[in-house]
Length: 423
Image (cartoon, rainbow, N blue to C red; front, side, top):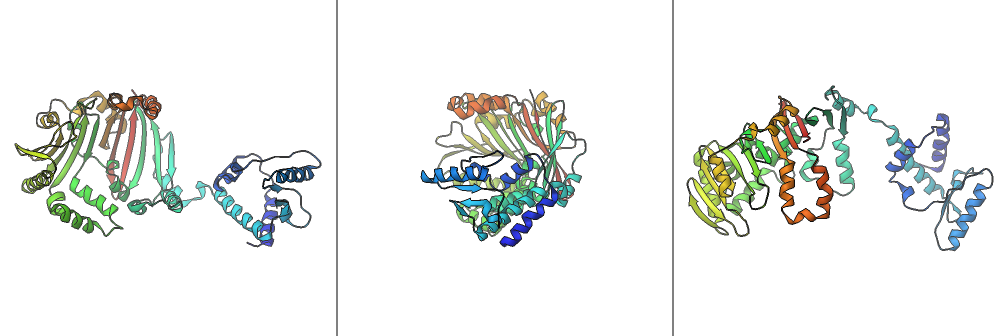
């Protein structure tokens, strides 16, 4: 942009008249990076003598060793007279560059979401019976992050489509719902459909995760995360070289539905387990034997029915890796291993779980369950209970009951829901 073009642009704005209010100006300053907050300003108002007063103030400040800039109005010959740096008019080149930058920022401010086709399409898929909605342009967000030097890694290929999440207030709490592309939910499995076993975990669990067909889910996630690093094949070779395990044959091929749960409200009582249904008991047994052989190099490993017990230095409880009744179990503590084999109560039978399911809606299959009261109790039994950050966060967590997430597949998309109950 030349000086003449800059002046024509500024004069052309007069055709639109004045728009009172500071909302658009605040948005313009935000797009420009809020430059007004980076220096002190003296604002001179009145009827006559404003320009003279500004120039005198600038001269006084310069005598005290400060660099000054001043805006004066009107001008005699050129707009460059209005912007002065250390008592000199702005150069034509600098003035034109500043106007060009402000023009680009103004175009962003004037371009509203209602004018964006991608926004309109995303909103058309959102539920109509909503209290409100959240819109996030993931592609624009990714560009902003990359522009600031951040590396998105595998998520660069996932953050493509706009995200719209609708907000509903229900009797049990608050619910957010959104339709996600399959690539997005593949990278974050708990936003996808859950498996059938989340309600089967022990009743006292404060964390539960459920993933259908864990082998396929991990394979899809690997495809997303390794797309720019030579593909899953490179990871397979590295794993085999380090452990002797073939990722596809020894690990992923036999994995079916999986669930993970954690319980306990103090460090001594903390326990949990990962339970994976096996499609091939011979293959999963070979996996258990190979893992035990690898772990035995740095931990004490003994046999137990169907597998091994592992004592690791520094861990308060032993690990147990075994196979039983068509399931592979990795349990933390003897209590957790016993609970897997002898369940005494189901999470699905608790009132908290039923309330969460009712709030989420019957069409969704739960993939995540988190109960905050037990987590608060657990943290309060550790040294973190007196931590300043924890004391600030705790009052907000105390207002939450259960957080749940689930999904429902619709072709190549997943309708995902995230909700929180209030005690």
